Image (cartoon, rainbow, N blue to C red):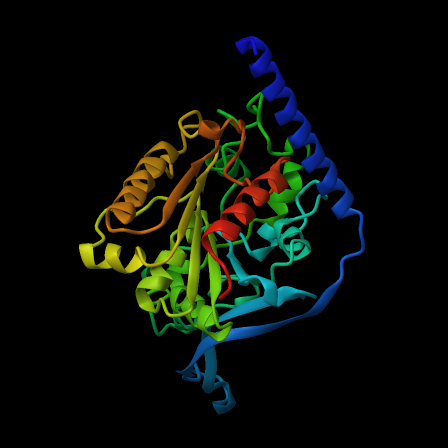
Length: 350
């Protein structure tokens, strides 16, 4: 067969396959969503004594619970078929990240459930429904601590969000091939909330709680994004016993891990994913190109230690225009299918 004809035929078959897949996704989204159960609970938490500030009644003293992690879940009717997936959000956001997209499309939480995966959405400790420890702020208010001891609370502006999330090279200017639904960016801005991680002790309780949740579920895949991108690995370094897989999306990878730590992480299948335009939006907070390079190096180290690690850099796969918020991009379900395909090959329920 003529080479040009073969290439054209392959391209046509590929386009047809993608079209069918897209049509199937559209069809699936219109079917009733059936689940076996849904609910919510907390993981972790510690008691902390609080003193009554001057002039307050004695009843103001007592105990509070801090460092707990809120989790909501949905279990499909055949949820036992696959390992559960725990999704954790990034900076200045909550687990809303994984729900309905800013322009009203199906989020990854629902899509994974429709693909027979039990999904657990967690709010990081100190964020959203997990609450935060107010004692250091209250101490300043009562005069027991100096104002200089107040923690730094991050509240990302729209301008910073636009650049860091790589919607375009400058605020208000979008990349021509961008996948994020720019017309609905105001809905994303509503999701951005104060980040109180500065209130947390070391190590971050979210890491411990993620490891505990995986164990509580008798095995789970941990998925992190951005600020929480390397949290699955940090959780595994605390307690790997319940972690069946780790998915890290768009985050820097540490270069100072020891050989023993790499060897430990190499026992768990690992997937990393990065979008497009990594060097095309000059963020003052993070170099996404450098983040990719550090994670390429991490993947190489894990492989050298005998581990199962894969990097999905989407432009190299022919998938263009994805932002930092790729779970909300217009092709988000296509990307979800890539992850589900990886899960099918690398993480199986025994």
